[in-house]
Image (tube, rainbow, N blue to C red; front, side):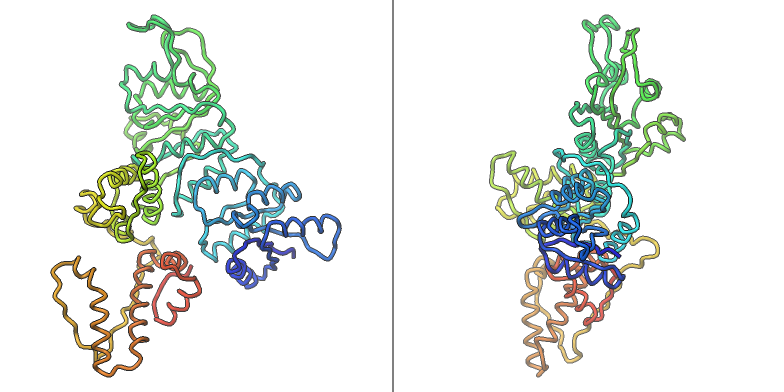
Length: 506
C-alpha cells in the first residue's frame, strides 16, 4: 500500500501521526520541509521504482521556508487526483477557504482530535481516486474567527460553496454574524467581482420595500420624479443579501418568488421585464418552518430559499471562542480610536466566557469598544467589566448530549492527619487573592505533623485540581484541556492515569 506522506516542521506532530497511523496499519513517510516533498515527487516522476508515491498528503499550512498552500498547488499540478489534507493552528476563515479553493480534500484545525484525524485520513485513502476540486486563487475574506467545532463547520461550508452560485439561507440569532457569512460567501464565489448589496427587509416600511427591491419608473407614484434602480439591478452580476427575510410582507414574497423562478422582474409602474443576473442569499433569526405553518410565509418561497442552509451558532454555544474574539475586538477598537491596545487578564476573560451574551458577537464587540474607552488601566481586570456582565449570574454549563454523561472527577482527599486551616476571609475576592496563603498554611501544617514527601503530596493535590478544572471547562476533551493548561497531550494523559481522574476519550 502507498504510504501517507506527512509534512510538518513540528516533530511532535509527525511522531503522533506516525504512531497513530501505524496502529491502523497505515504506512507513513515524513518530511520536515515542502521542498523535500517536491524533490521526492520529482524522483518518482522520473521513474525511480524504489520509491512509492503518496496515497494521501497531510501537510501543515505554515512552515519555515514554505507554505502548505503553495505546496498544495504544486502537488496538484503534478498529481491532480492526490487527496491533500491541510493542518493549521490558525483557526480562521481565510485558511479554511484558501485550503478548499486550492483543492484540499479536507481542512484539519490544530489541536486536532487524534482518532478523528485518523478517521479523516482513512476516508481520504478510500476516496484517493476521486478528482480534486478546481483550483482558484484566494480572495480576501470578511473577518471571521472561531475554533469551536460549529464555526469550523461554517468555514468548511463556505469553502465548499466557493465555486457555486447556489441560493443559501443563513439562520441564527440576531448579532451572531449572518451578514459576515453572506459577505464571505460572496467574496469567495465566482461573482466576487460583482457588487454585494444588502437590504434588511424588516427595517424598511412595507410601502417602500417593493420600490427598494425592484425600483420604479418615473411617475409610478406621487414623488417618483425620476426612474430609480432597485436593489436587484444594483446587485447585477453580484450578490443580493436579503436580511431578516422572515419579516418580508406576504404579497412581496410572491414577487420575490417570481424573480427567483423566472429570473426577471418589473419595476414599480413599469411594463418591460428586467433580467436579473443575481445570486440571492437570505438570512433570518426566525423559524421559517413555523412561519409557514402559521401562514405568514409562503411555503414555495421557503423551499426556493432553503437550497443550502447554514446555521450560525450563538456565541453562548461556543464559549471557547470568546477569548480569541475579545482580543481581536480589543485590537480592532484600539486601531479605530488610535490608542494603544489594551490587554485583558485571564480572570476577566474567564468571566466573559461565562456570560450568556444575549446580543451574541455584536454584543461582545460593543463590550470591547466600551472597555477600550472606559477601562482605567492598560490591563483589563474583572472589576473593569461592564455592569451587564458583572451583575448577571454566569451562564450554566451546557448540558452534555444524550449518551455522554457529565464529567465525573473524583476529589483526592487530604491526608487524615491534616488539620483544618481557617483564615479570616471577608469576601470571595479575598478568598481568590489568598489562595497562596492557604497553600502555605497547609504546607506548614503538614511539615509540623511530620508528613513525609510534602512536595509530592501537595503537588498531587494541586495537579489534580488544576487538571480537573481544565477538563470540566472543556467538557472532558483532553487535547483542548492540555492546550489551555500549556502542557502536552501525553503529559495530561499520563497525569489523568496517575491521579485517577476521569475524562472522555479524545
